Amino acid sequence: MGWAIALHGGAGDIPLSLPPERRRPREEALRRCLQIGVEALKSKMAPLDVVELVVRELENCPHFNAGRGSVLTNKGTIEMEASIMDGNTKKCGAVSGLTTVVNAISLARLVMEKTPHIYLAFDGAEEFAKEQGVETIDSSHFITAENIERLKQAQEANRVQVDYTQPIQKIDSKKETPIANGDSQLGTVGCVAVDSQGNLASATSTGGLVNKMVGRIGDTPVIGAGTYANELCAVSATGKGESIIRGTVARDVAALMEFKGLSLEEAARCVVEERTPKGTVGLVAVSAKGEISVSHNTTGMFRACASEDGYSEIAIWSFGLN
Image (tube, rainbow, N blue to C red; front, side):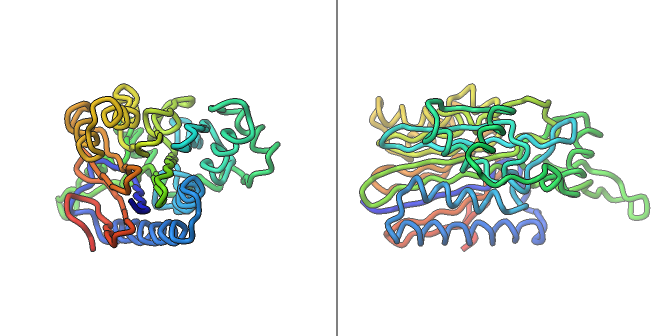
């Protein structure tokens, strides 16, 4: 038994041809955040604190679909959501519909620790944020030129874009070759961690779907769907929210371990490969024994993981980057 950590930056149709200028900033962010998490676990920080810390860092990175990089609704507005869960106590907190909170994951934790509830959303969540004195900022802070372009692209195609939807192809009249209209390579973030005593925690944060209806809630804040932790494992999922909710993805991994006696890897693969539609889900998970599982049925998933035994990986597709 030893500590272990895994984090993700979203799963989807990530092409092998993803340009280096789009790929490298995400790789560097994952590497930096992984190191932050590893150092925190080495210093004996509690897993719940570790996953919050790492997800906050990911939220502050504009290259992912959470916090600063959150995508826009069909009205051009921001609605962020997040959830966090402690494995030993099964205490959890979740938020949706945030428009001004800098770090949604920290507000989710405050819901868990400072209220009798699990889930607060929209005006109620924003009011709670003010009461708790968490950092807020005008919503214009989150509306970037890149995400305005992503929304324009989605609306022109009359579609709602999940993480890493391939850009629309337009023809360059001068070269008569297809060119990508904007960059939709952006994904949800999450982190799972276990310490050397087997304590587990999970956290997930997102801006949702590009061009989603105002008021839409995805899997990320739904405990048992996008986020789950108990005494056996911690899971953070990413992909098409509706499919993840229908499949109760995160909870099913834990349930297969609990009731079927499957290993973490067996349970994760069963859920991803057999229980959810192809092209819809990815997840990272750790067990109380310090095992790590990374599984996705999409083309790729930005992820990073490390364990006390010296294992470390940063990857997108089925092969590592280092």
